Image 1 (cartoon, rainbow, N blue to C red):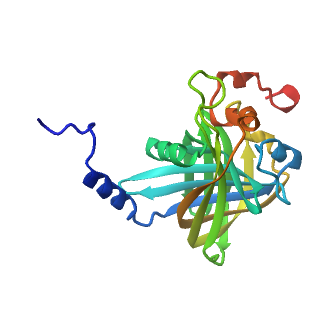
Image 2: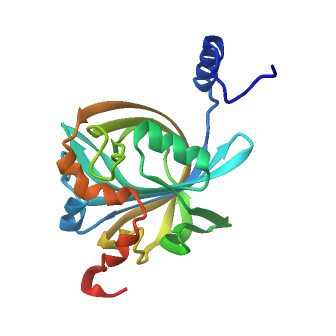
Length: 265
């Protein structure tokens, strides 16, 4: 019988696949990062327990093009500063991706809040524009001009917090207790430029990032970086504590009932 590729793999094939995955080449990305202070009450409201606010109400947006073998991935992240068990890090609310390959792995392995979307990084000389869009709405746009090279930072460890869970088959709760994941990335930068510009947040019922306004813009950069990552389960989370927040992960038609602040769009 001819090989049936959806059939079970042999132990040797499983080992070979695992070995190949552990030898991925360095993957570099070109990305725009914007950092600002927002409304501290709004930031605290989006953090599921046991995450807590840090000393500053920071928001960080990363909009990148990643040079994957044979194709380019658009990857974005809109994250707020958070702390857990003595560790300061970032809690991403939405991570738009342009390829299913990046979407599925991140959601299933780490619990990343990845969703299919449009990610744009454009540069014409000094002028640049980076944007995140879903459902035809550009909900984050960074505009500006490169304003000079910056010193390269030392390699840096950055922690992201994710909640990994499976909704229950009967539609009520979860199939098992959710877990809080610490994902640690070791980032290296080979080029970095300062950008003068601004950040525009637009209303979207699916990605309501406009609830976290730019109170004080701390900086915008464009650079080239690479990173590796490893994750660990930090603790199990009570289902009743996380349930009020799981809408963050999905495009629920009922979100149309969530009016923006003041009831206007």
